[in-house]
Length: 194
Image 1 (cartoon, one colour):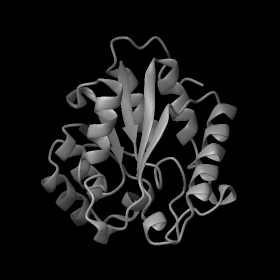
Image 2 (image 1 turned 30 degrees about the vertical axis):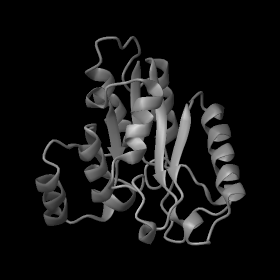
Image 3 (image 1 turned 180 degrees about the vertical axis):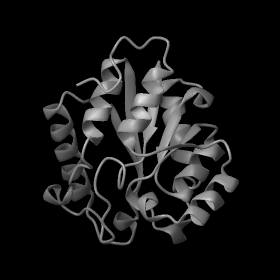
Image 4 (image 1 turned 60 degrees about the vertical axis):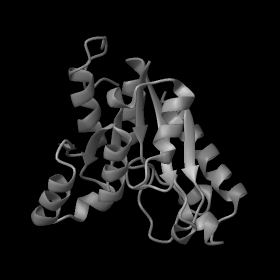
């Protein structure tokens, strides 16, 4: 099985400092869902792994998070994309759980659920925390320069890469999908497709 793990906020949808609290606040990053569709067409299964500490902090209700994800799934379907599952950590940082990124718990759960070797699984990130989670889980870290990574200075980016030296860097999610598809021997689609 070809599996790829995505962060959510800043990668699939525009990052908001105040959390995505309702479906209408979930705004797709231009081209992101189309990139997911291209990966799907080449046989990739897409799973989202996201910290949602707003639940643990009392800022979000579980029903709101579920409604946001239902909206995300509908928008994905509208462009021919499929997100197989969403794993999320509902805990506040002070709860010291093992699923909150940068810890690898969520990714280990995904690997166990899908029966895949995480060493073969790319993980798409826009924060140092997520890159460190990918590294800790044994995934292949993929840094996209959008979301929170879009505002990095060159020295900050170099600092992240010195901490996670195996990370591959891409301009955006579409460029990451193109690179992955170009290196996939099973790919039967045209890069840049749709």
